[in-house]
Figure 1 (cartoon, one colour):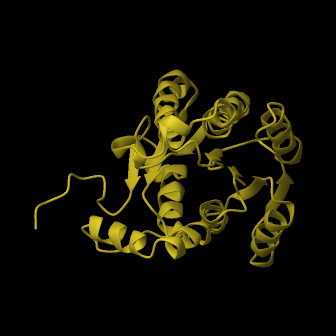
Figure 2 (figure 1 turned 180 degrees about the horizontal axis):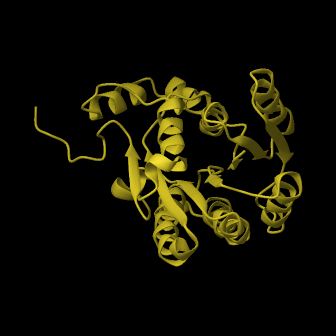
Figure 3 (figure 1 turned 180 degrees about the vertical axis):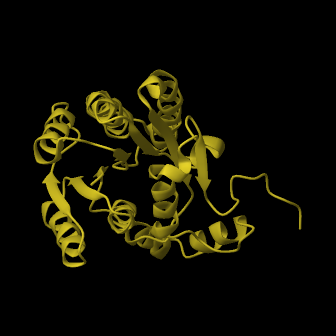
Length: 248
């Protein structure tokens, strides 16, 4: 049985990806700081006939990636897919950036994925290869908050560098770049600004806002053998909002 490790596994995208990968036959390991929510997602997958392990982990801790991958190796002896999904926002405007907040954002969104890849790559290579999928964002094209945009743009750079370095071990490294999604987290933002979701909807040629399952489908594809000749790429999961706007 193939094994997938998903960080941010208690979140909307992480949980959707875990469910989809479980349906595709992966045993899934969910890592998140939210103990109860992570366990609940794992239990749901198990009830539906899948195999899941939940790990409580704070990726702000530099030692966490080694412990997480060590747990995967002890439990399964292999790792076939790593989904770097955990992340956070903040440090929005350059005039208000606090250095500690900046470092925390880069630490979770960029440094932790790098350390996880560093630890996961030997285990993947020993099993004949695998797929690493980094959850970036469309903001690398358009810009938004200073900290978030910088970290997600860096994650795409990491994706491309590792695709070159790890290809010899049959490890593919790709990124997905979602746009604004209909998630519980973003519901709060929409409630604060009722025009926000409608604005994103109008930006898309498909005239809708994305869902976590849209991103999960892209992740599942990149994890599968159907994507065996794709590496170093960015799959935009944003309903065409990565395109230049067209005049009315």
